Length: 608
Ligand code: F6R
Image (cartoon, rainbow, N blue to C red; front, side, top):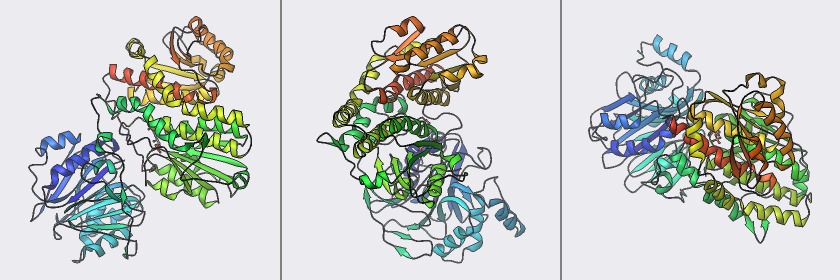
């Protein structure tokens, strides 16, 4: 949540900072602000609303002179999204400006202490304590001041600090949130995400928790918590800025839906050599794999839904018990996890706070952790024992699409690889599954091509107030994701139910105003789904059925039909999601919703 960016160089800072903010807006978009050092003092403009609004107020940054500065786009935690609560926050003497991503958990105590000393607070935010602490501790040594200030903070805080007494110098601090340094020529940067940097540099340093950095136009110096200078590896970002732009589409979400054939291919192809699955960055021997008596998958939101699909597929192929649990629940339990547990953590961003906490909890109990992650160099990728990168490329739309489908592809690869290694499937089945995985990109393309009439269905159904998604087994796991996709971008209430469970209570809500989306892609369970369809139709509901291409029976049962390309039954959740993503997209568009930036949401949930 919240995007931060910092720049120091020889050109005007504000336009560069605004460009960075535009690319970070997916992280939070209720207010934005920028502060630059103009040679004498800190100039600041901030306001509720979008980065575009901030750009208007500053004439694209032209109104703010100065060649070093910091900027922020906010997802409110403490205090409403008002002009005053927007970041940056200034110290009382106006000599410090600070931006923050995270939550200062002890802010109430710090605020009381500072107010007791006479500091006057302008905002309701937790962040403002940082600005006052910087002023309080400043003794002419900015590095020492930043360290002292950070040592007073509890919780999660990624900070950017600008000081009017230290021209051209910026500091940034990382504790539990993403922070990346960018190395330019005669200019340097920091940001929450590489997407804010790639238009200016591809040479980056991924910061670790407890580290902080000093930036001038010529140098970047990184320190550990004790203030000791440390040497960090410079990484090279492999994708281009076009990957983080809309490329002619109206929305990032549509662009990312359309990118899925290529994204899934990028997950799959590098891992299949001579018909065998192999991972460049992850390997376990058969003896190691056999030593695990269970697998625990943990994640949040859509990544959790991918994990639910993974549970069905891994159990079916490997015959190892798999639990899939929400990270926000797992982190506060006393889970039965030890060195015989293989933990699989799934995350697009690699920065989700609950997922990181659950992961730490389980690793602390001895679990070996395999992370399935998209963002290279992210916190989860670096904490895990092993990583399978999904290589989906940057995902900007808040609602995940290619992030989710590539997670499924990685889980399928893992399941087939593990089943082969453990000898739970014979060679012919292994070869068949590998070629089914290789067929996924073209199946996804076919799912896109098959469903030109999704838009028409969305026009017909967009006024609905509430609907249900039902399915059994893998279709149930897919129903959860289909339902989330719709509700998060269209704000229409929707629930996913295991089809057989409706009659145990929820069927009371079914009436002639309800649409039920019935996922019927598990052919062995088709007849059971038909019974459930009949139950809801008997109560007046309309049914939109999803079934494998060529299934004629579905037309007799459902009012409308979406076809899903045929393929391996275990892998249906992946092509099945394409029409559901499109359905959600077109409904949201019909309803005039802000598709890429749905209300109340942010892409990377780095707070609890
Ligand atoms: C929904 C969505 C979220 C994320 C969740 C986990 O479209 O994107 O539910 O899936 O916040 O995020 P990651 O995968 O980054 O850990």
